[in-house]
Length: 198
Image 1 (cartoon, rainbow, N blue to C red):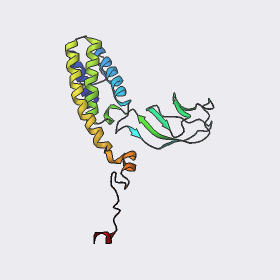
Image 2 (image 1 turned 180 degrees about the horizontal axis):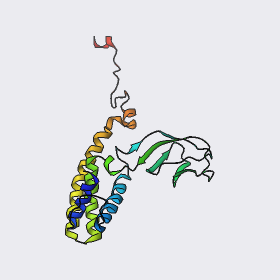
Image 3 (image 1 turned 45 degrees about the vertical axis):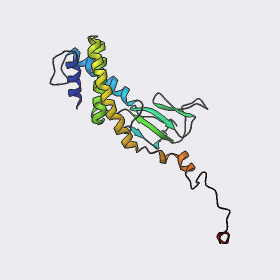
């Protein structure tokens, strides 16, 4: 689903006529795009399999500051005193933006454009945007509930794909691995010697 198709979906939801382009001078189109953009960012904010990066190095500039791209919505440094503040890395220990060295982010979450999102996420975001758009424009609780229900159904596909990509396995858990590390519980060693059987 491209952005035009998603906008047309929002327009249909409020009974507005469809358009052939996103650039038409139509107030409903502008409002639909704004609503879709808001939900696109909101859905991605928590971090999914497709928009997380690990061990990213951000370089210090000539002023000693480390800049973070605008699309990065979550930044977790390997140094707990370094946090994202605005579009720069901030040191909470020294209360300064002057870092003076490269910074490694062990995890980042990036807000992708509509076309770069997987189809299941596009569908989920579009249904949520429809429900929000109905609430904003025509305040029809029945139609809003219908799209909320459709969003809930599409969220099942999103969660399934997220789990498939993560390859979640209880035996990959470090605590479980330690517990299973060759120790067999409740097994007693035999105190009998081989010649005791004779």
